[in-house]
Image (cartoon, rainbow, N blue to C red):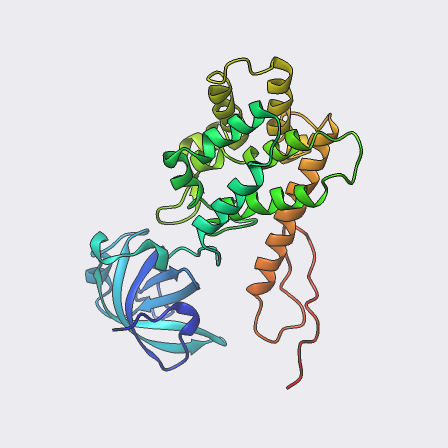
Length: 318
C-alpha cells in the first residue's frame, strides 16, 4: 500500500500507515471517561490522534517516541483535521525508514559535498587546505556531516541541513572574494567550511532533532575547536598564529555573548563569517516558517524568535 503522508490527509479519509508518536497523554473527557491523545508525526508535519475505545489496552502497547501502525478516520474538529484511531500496533524497527519521518534537504547530499570540496580545493594556503580536507576526506565524518540537521528548530531543520547551510555560507564567501581589500580569503573560506562541524556531535537525529548530552553540556563551538585542534596537531609545521586565527573564527561565529559566543569577532574575517552565517541561518529559518503557513495566506503566524509576523504577498490570482 502506498504511504499516506500527514500533509496529504483530508477530512473523511481512511488512513492506514506508520507514524512516529511525538506526544502521548491520557486526559479525561467531559463525561469523566479517559481517552488517549497522541500527536503523530512524519517528515511532512504533525497531526493529533485520539482513541476513545479500549483506551487502557491500547495505551499499554506503545510509548512516546515509538512508531505505531494505525488505522483511523480523518475527522474535522475546530477547523483542524485529526485522526479518530480505530486500531493500532507497535511497528518494528525493520518496518521503519527514518527518511519518511524526518524532513530532508531537497538537494542530494553527495552533490552538495562535491560542490563544497570543489570550492575548498581552491584554498591556496596549503596548511588551511590540508586542515579542511582532513575532514572532507574522512568518510566517518562526512557520513555524519551529510545527514546532520543545521539546528534543532531555528534553521535548516532537516536531514542534510548542516551541509546545505555550510555550502551556502561558503558560496556567500566566494561571492565576496576581492570585494573588500585586506581580507584573508583562504582563512575566511576555511572558517566557513568548518565553523559548524561540532554539530555532528551536538545534535541527534535518529527519531527527532534534539541535543546529545555532549551537545547540552559542551556545545558545538567548543567541540568544533577540539576537532580542529586535533587535526592541526597532525599537520607538520602548521603556523601557531594561523591556528589561533582559526580558533577565533570557530569561537566567535555566533557574534554575541548572549548568542552563545565565547568571544565576539575581533578580526575582519571573523566579523564577515559571523554576519554571513547569521544571514544564511535567518533567511533559511524565515523561509521555512513561511512554508508552514496556510496555503493562500498573506501573512505568516507570529514568529516568537523574531517577534513579528512576515508578509508573503497577495499571491497569484487565478
